Image 1 (tube, rainbow, N blue to C red):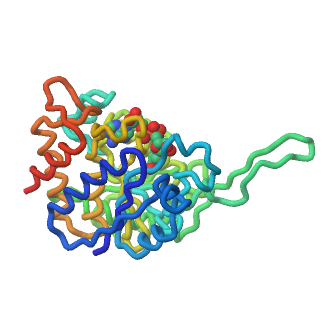
Image 2: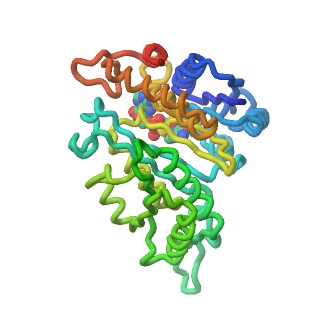
Length: 357
Ligand SMILES: NC(=O)c1ccc[n+]([C@@H]2O[C@H](COP(=O)([O-])OP(=O)(O)OC[C@H]3O[C@@H](n4cnc5c(N)ncnc54)[C@H](O)[C@@H]3O)[C@@H](O)[C@H]2O)c1
């Protein structure tokens, strides 16, 4: 198996180093090659996505990314900015399925702004379509009408095959997540009462569910889903939705856990090749101080083992090691509470390695 390691900018190199340390401790047969992206790509080759980095990513089975961006690049021309490197690599690799888990460890229940009993033990997965919908639909633009008034247009569109392929990802994930004989559940989020695009979305999801008799499919309008995520988030297992609804709901869900340093993510292509990265950014304000939380990146490695390398045993090992480190009281500054053992980024990586069994 080949893995491209793209640390990126800011805290990227520090947190990725911890994830690599954990991966190496597992002694798996994975060939790792590092390359620059984002600001680091610009510094190395004048391009936020250097050709050699893209080539490596294309030739690899998976990509582990830290984060890109730093305020010092804000004055560069748009196409040279670090974030362009990220958008381009997602597009070049056709990563259409974005997986954003929201998982709250009982030890961190106080970090959420919601009551502990509402969020403690939360474990849901949002599957967001990433390459279609109103973000990409044509026609689009701002034009001037005959009466001189300006008008903005965007077009929400999905075709059947786009809906079916993201639906499949969600149903397959629900099957993989099924625990202790529980029924796998998918909740498809749409606005089928108003938008024809999502009326088709709902029809296709229902058709597809016939192929997955083990999975219970339900439907929810997006406005209700936004409300239910705050009211009773533990009712959800896997949620699947389009690009714009997913954009909003996944950020909402991530905040249920109260801690951005804990949330991994994955973006997959049709063959389960994936790019794995923490949900947070490059945090230039704390870069180089050894205080960043590496757990989101380490948990991204667990997702990689599960979804691209199909190695559930190793994925669970990593997730359990994170749980053990937290249960032992270890915390980085962002999740520290009274009475905990406050440690730095590097020491947290060591604590997770230590807890691997
Ligand atoms: N996927 C990505 O690479 C990505 C995503 C978002 C933002 N960015 C970029 O990151 C840069 C900073 O953006 P921002 O400040 O809006 O968002 P950010 O996520 O980098 O930081 C937001 C806040 O969270 C803290 N934080 C983030 N990750 C942390 C961690 N692992 N441990 C402890 N604290 C953590 C930061 O210190 C900061 O206070 C910008 O250049 C932006 O473009 C990149």
